[in-house]
Amino acid sequence: LKCRIYMGVKDIQRQNPNVFRMKLMGAKVISVNNGSGTLKDACNEALRDWSASYKTSHYMIGTVAGPHPYPTIVREFQRIIGQETKRQILEREDRLPDSIIACVGGGSNAIGIFSDFINDNQVNLIGVEPGGQGIKTGK
Image (tube, rainbow, N blue to C red):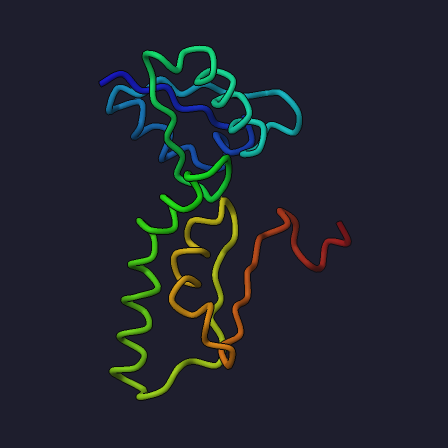
């Protein structure tokens, strides 16, 4: 199965080991330099490609972005993270946690773990994302 993967140039640099593995498996990784060279721009390029070749291609995304139903699909596949976390916490602590903290990034990890706690009002859901600079750098 041929596979084209669009990634922002900055994400390729950050995820170099994963890019290497994708290429080993035969994927064509396309570096997106448009805009800020990040996930948003890569998604736009992938959608442009798909809309030009939709009769012979499929669009798949592993992040919580894009048109419906893609964010829902990602949530459903990632929700096992939250289900398993909740099960283990209740089994070991016999109560819900005060907070759940997840990296945001493309959103798949966050929606995966948050999905089973969204209706638990007593649980604080906290999303974090690195700024790329240390707190003490002044940048």
